[in-house]
Length: 287
Length: 336
Image (cartoon, rainbow over all chains, first blue to last red; front, side, top):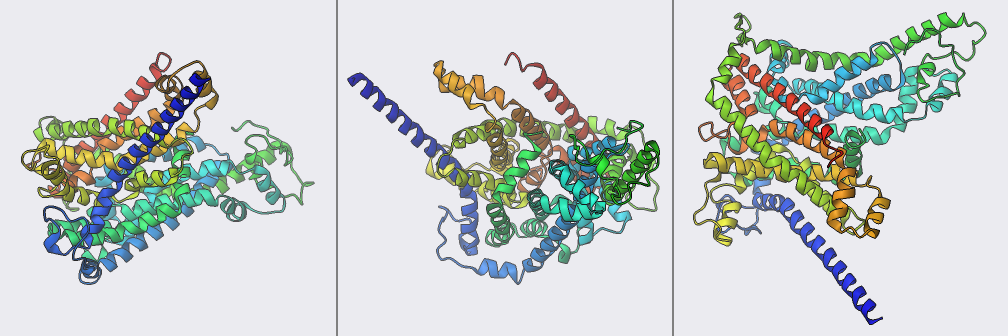
């Protein structure tokens, strides 16, 4: 009797200890994850004199928003922000349209060479974008797409097609065929079935694909670095990197601009978190 | 898939892949005027094919023009002394770009650095990602918050986090302050970005920090599939937590481990932005990795042929390595 109570209390105690240890580890880990961000934000509110002072200031004193106002106005980051927005929105819209059309064809039609074409598309998933950057540059030059936002958009769209088609095909294939058959009997053609039935039903998958595409084009750097020369056509990541390259010590300004690039991403991520999980798992563990 | 006579099956007898019948756009109001089955089916297939092509054409055309065609071109260019000026002719030089790579000490150093980066970043991302996923795997309060915090670096742009790490690893940066002024682990401030190995450490630290959240997400999803009955019966049999992990959890999440490993190895060899922005490949090319070296050859020295050869070599290398990994993972599962 006594023995069982002590044993139970040992078990409880051990369990409490395990839970606290678990949280201690998690909190330390999460701290390491976010301290760089916090430090970045803190630096963005420091005036130049304090950005590399030792010991480091965690809470800026005196705090100033001048880095933000300067970046936004005198250093043109408002324009880069808008460029990034244009590129990301256009890329997402075009990519979603084209990849959902392809996914529909792959999910709902049978035709000779279908598997071969699909494999060809999946090849695009395996070849990393950087491998193609030299011939793509030559091609963009030939097509007159160098130094233009259009040159960014079309290549971003092309690069995003394999993943999005793959993602959407799986979702489309899971939509019950009876619904489409009913529509077909009512005389609806393929285009109407795609537009009025499949797309509305696939909203979660479309949301996932949109978020991934938007963020990928919002953050893309290497291709923008390669084809954009005119300062007025830079996107945010490119502008931030080049600005830092020229003013290597103006960390307050660099991080104010960085915060402008990162905060929208964090908001999108926090709001649409569940779609991230869906996207990652449908691409990975199931397959 | 084209099995001669497939009579139009009435809608509603949907099998597992009934859509081939559906998408011929059957005219329900004109069933009487149906020609013999074979011809109807053939015509229906032709119509299916045409509709499918309409849906495929725009995306596929763009994909082939901007992804597949450059893929072939990369191979071709690697055999040329490529001339960037359009009017000048490029000369075919056979394997000379490849021969040059094998005699280029910087190419070898870049290869070693890429391998070092991989070795420094892949195992920690797997172990720590799995560790965090295990800690988060029960319905503990705050799970969503922690998951978000660990995933945050993954969604942040490489440019921003690279600059951030350059700042943290600066001579008078936060890392040196922690190691030197606070914990006194180092007697003098380390010039992280001023040397090859310290530079690689800084870049690798960034890679791990940015990547843990991704492997955590994959493992979190995989852990949902671990059969709880097995866990429980193992517990009844007196297996401790570590034994249960080894005997039940690890085998169950094996596909995820394969996937994570292959993807991380590919990702490791594709490291570019962080090296370019944190160390710039310097000092004196000492932290150059394959892609930064390829980029420098192509867009700084305008040597497109040599750059392409490096890109092709890297692609082949990654491809072979992926195959080897998949084979290795396939061969030993039963005895693990």
